[in-house]
Amino acid sequence: MLAWLNDVWLKLAPGAAATDAGEAGARGEQAAADFLQRRHGFAIVARNWRSPRDRRDEIDLVARDGDVLVFVEVKARSADAMVPGYFAVNERKKRVLRRAVHAYLSALPEPPRTFRFDVVEVALSDRLPPQCLHFENIPLFPKGYHVARQSGSLPAAERRAGRE
Image (cartoon, rainbow, N blue to C red; front, side, top):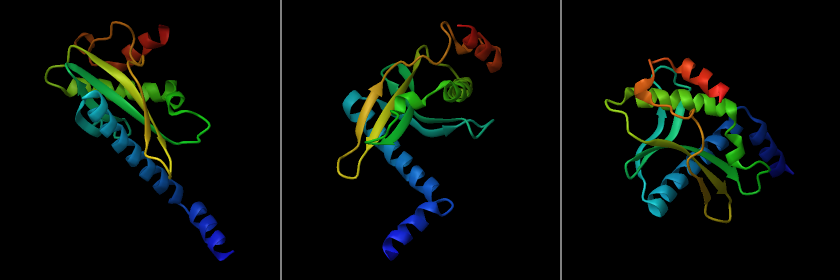
């Protein structure tokens, strides 16, 4: 009884859930990076990149797939989760990712000719190794988006994205 009560207390204590989620997220990102490197030959360029203008805007992984720059959102879930990680990348999350990717591309001395957005869903289990599902080329930007054509005004790009 005392052990059960202690478990409940630890789960309800402030910060306990955030720590567990942070640890699961870190495990998921590591598993996704390993998966992309070993299975697909990606080169990891950056992890947990944050925009200097707004630290809330984060890109989990930035990688290279040959000549293509790939921005990766990692969604770690328990193996028995009700909602798959792919569906957790909703329109609100895509808006944040557009801002972060635009900031990243704008900071580069020469933007890449080709870039894309991928989602890696990682199923975490206590009994099994992490299982990764890779979704390539998820629509994030409006058709024809190009960093060089932007006048530094991301909201204009987002307004166009809303019309398409």
